[in-house]
Image 1: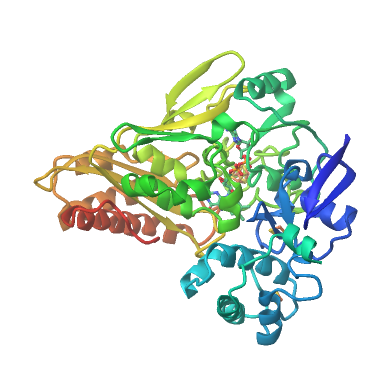
Image 2: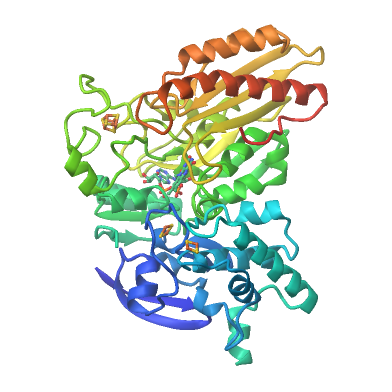
Length: 172
Length: 340
Ligand SMILES: Cc1cc2nc3c(=O)[nH]c(=O)nc-3n(C[C@H](O)[C@H](O)[C@H](O)COP(=O)(O)OP(=O)(O)OC[C@H]3O[C@@H](n4cnc5c(N)ncnc54)[C@H](O)[C@@H]3O)c2cc1C
Ligand code: SF4
Ligand code: FES
Ligand code: FES
């Protein structure tokens, strides 16, 4: 049974005709071409498919696209502000927090929600918040340090922790 | 890609509508809340409902109200993240908050509900595998086969009850409301479970667990400790929930001890509770209760880490939980404790 699914993704309205049993991950990657969100285990066991739904980290591999309608979805493609990378992305690149990069979209999305919720998280809060995202490469320390660096820069810049996709859209 | 099998999706707005939709669709339908247990099972072809009734739009199932003096009503649709973060619940029913925050990962707790958690499927190393894996090794009786691969001569399935919040809620005397198109009933939470890896829930066809009722906190102190390989992601391979009412003279007036992942249902250790009543939490009492827990915990060789380790850890976790509560009572706190 196909149905017309209307999604708000990174501030844009998208309509797709897809079967109701398609996950948000499948629709993002295969219908909308937004392949930034990665697929790993597809069973909730790795976190690489993490996106934000109404600002809260959620696993797109276990969310039906039909159930994400009417809610604000943010993927890693919506993190940057036009050509300007998000401070988290810059810090990940600078500190080697992204090696093979497969976990990075999920890590970035979860970390961006953390920084919006808490501008100066402790190390414990960072590890607790990212405890649903596995990384096979970095040993996690670089990721934690990158989140700390981004948080410090964002506090200094006085920037809002994360621009809402709509605001980013309007500024463009 | 591991894909879901096809189904029809219904989105009721009220509990009544949800119950009616389930009744109309009959045995082909299942309710889905957060989907964090059901969707992996469907991707592995352990469940293939033709109709899913999505509960997330049912606003009356996301209510949370009450007080320590009157008890609480928890909508089955509230997320584990919301449950764990609730300051008053954490204060007066710490075991529930500790259990909720020990489930899975932060992201899964944003999605998974407490009702779905209470109904979570039982687990087994031979079952929680892809269709291809299970076909290669030979299917078992929980799905598609007719023998038990853990205990081949056994007529029953020993899959493990792997829910963290059930023992905590049971220890605090919770009951649940079950609603179907035909009737509505309230049962003690312990009666929701059956000691069987396949038919582990006593839900009647089409019944929805709509809310959980916690009695007044009324001097109860509680805690929950969980054993698992990693500090995140992993299901419990053992969990111990203890709730005690301790009098002014440090004597335990009433006790409940419930175990996760020690049987196919959340296991209430009735004798251990009797051994605590009327006693002070002295080292000899704690040791005797721990021995009793060691006796009743009968893990099966179908989950992570070794059988004998899990059994021995039952003794250790219950000792730690009782010591937490003894210290908490001595300092006038409730049973706040870090994870095991
Ligand atoms: C990687 C991973 C780790 C996990 N770790 C843990 C863990 O440590 N501890 C733990 O307890 N769980 C764990 N889980 C399982 C699951 O995430 C939680 O149990 C969660 O709370 C399930 O809730 P849900 O709303 O997502 O349930 P769903 O998946 O929506 O439903 C689960 C089952 O309950 C039924 N159901 C749901 N709601 C109702 C209702 N209101 N009335 C009647 N039936 C209903 C569904 O039909 C289904 O059979 C884990 C899952 C994953 C993927
Ligand atoms: S305990 Fe036996 S029957 Fe049950 S899931 Fe495991 S192998 Fe299958
Ligand atoms: S792909 Fe979603 S958690 Fe692994
Ligand atoms: S950078 Fe390779 S998995 Fe994290």
